[in-house]
Image 1 (spheres, rainbow, N blue to C red):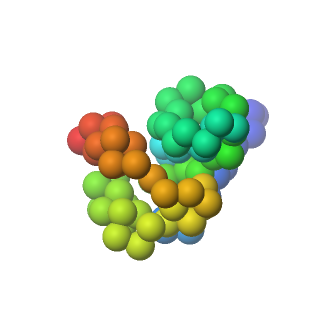
Image 2 (tube, rainbow, N blue to C red):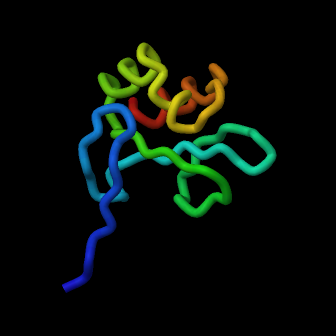
Length: 84
């Protein structure tokens, strides 16, 4: 039986299989991007794929704290596209 990698959502603090989460990454250059491959170089934070979680992340700045930088509006727009 193959082991399923688990990751913690930075917003809800729940553990989910890696495939069920969206990874947002801060690259070594300081850019913040949505990482669909899960292999992008840099500091990553995982978030559950739901509109409620996205709204909560935006309200309490969970991604900002996890990545230790401010998240641009374009990243939130891209996340909304993926969740919808």
